[in-house]
Amino acid sequence: MNQQFIMEVCIDSVASALAAEAGGAQRVELCDNLMEGGTTPSAGMLHTCLKSTSLEVMVMIRPRGGDFLYDEVEFEVMKQDVLAAKAAGAHGVVFGLLDANGHIDAVRTRELIALARPMQVTFHRAFDMTSDPHQALDVLIQLGVERVLTSGQEAEAHKGIPLIKALAAQSRGRIAVMAGGGVNESNIAEILTQTGINEIHLTGRHKVPSKMIYRNERVFMGVPHAPEYEKLITDPSRIRHMRESWQKQF
Image (cartoon, rainbow, N blue to C red; front, side, top):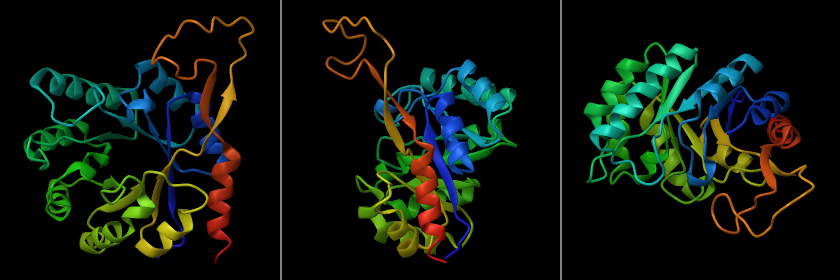
């Protein structure tokens, strides 16, 4: 087990980027629309995050929520977003493409990788929707992807520990296996210890109430009855606590 683990925080705001840095994270995955698992952030959000923090910024490239089988127009959007992220100075991009049978779409993935270089490439949790994770990992290794994010094909990473451990062994250092999905204070040490990985992905958020005084509770701008007057922002104390609690074991 590498005691110097890398903590990547999934964020959707500049406030969360700053909080992640204050808490001791090394890297962020910048998204929009986290309620759908993350989509591509705006150019303004990316530029401001890069200007506001010294962290590595990995940009989500996902044109919509839902599955990872994209049509030609959606794929064109992804290509343009990769180029825009590179032009903005992002450190890397995060994407995942599958075919209808749950295999890695190797042709399109290779094309996006070529457009992305010299940025880093992470294949996200589309990996957890593959029909054969071991074959999928071999494909990603052959394509030269730097890391894969996975919950071990379970709803939460701590339930997927056996597969994450097996994938890490299979990788033999050729690709980084990063655990994500439900990682928190109660399970981060177990995941790192039992899998032998050294990269972890989490949100570590807390609720921040709106400063609005007047509120029209009859109208919803998004999903009906979803919280309109609170934000979820990374909590630097949670990030710091998870990092320090792990380090104290050594």
